[in-house]
Length: 121
Image (cartoon, rainbow, N blue to C red; front, side, top):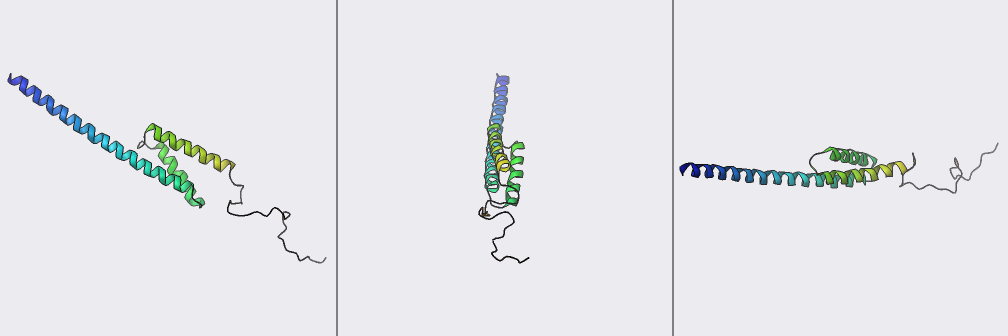
């Protein structure tokens, strides 16, 4: 009978320790996913910024998040979809040398600066 009490006490201790470890690991995993989500929000803010430098930083952060094990498989798939959209914008995006914020006057011929004075030959 005393062996049974010792065994049950030991088994209870093991089960209690395992439950506590499981809860702690689950909490850490949730914290890691929360941190991953905050970083994803920051990456989205950066890739949609006006500055090219910020967009490049956002692209790098997004690439790091895709390779990170802090997020779940679904989280990383979301980051991949955002990266694909971003890549599509870069491919189809603005022509070289022309930014979306710059207006192009299509009424002028190429090389014409709009000056009305003419040089005499």
